[in-house]
Length: 231
Image (cartoon, rainbow, N blue to C red; front, side, top):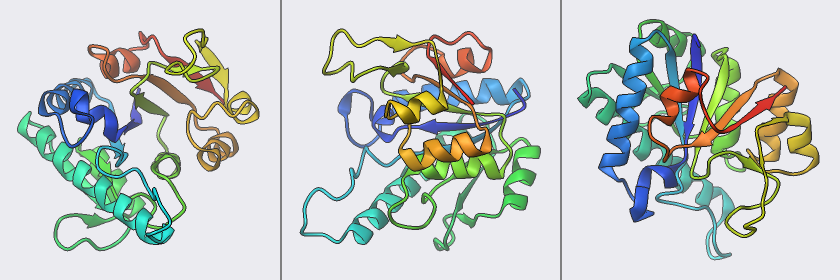
């Protein structure tokens, strides 16, 4: 694969602690990213904010403000994972859709693609910069903009199921499913806005579990055990 966008869930980065960062988990991710970069794959990264903020949970806070807090959570995640990537020897850039002091650079396609071509791991933090749009939507939007080959969707579960495997022990896992079927059956691989964007812009996804050893490397090598979402 020449260029991919890796979506990491915040919860997955929290490891067994379920909140904040689990350094061992993030270090393992960084080492996998390093290997695929050294093999010639350009890697962009979007990270969710669920290890810090799960969105508005009550009417006491405005939805727009709740979403802005979520954007800040993703920035913290990207800065942290970016620095762990630097620790293992990678070069990185962190982009946001809005000015964030001197912590990040403001996103532009040209700058991001140039960074990728230089072999830098490129982080897209802060979502789309607008409320009511999730990091799923930001993931698909950035993947389309940078002309990624595919989206690597690293989740806390190991693929796409016909129902929630945490609730239904008889849930069946798909080896392959079309994005149209994802939309029709509301399989919630990514949210509906992101799913429609994938369909309209022909952006495939590979969905797999982050907890499996070397799962990112295996996915890039075509050896993964997750679900292929076709276009």
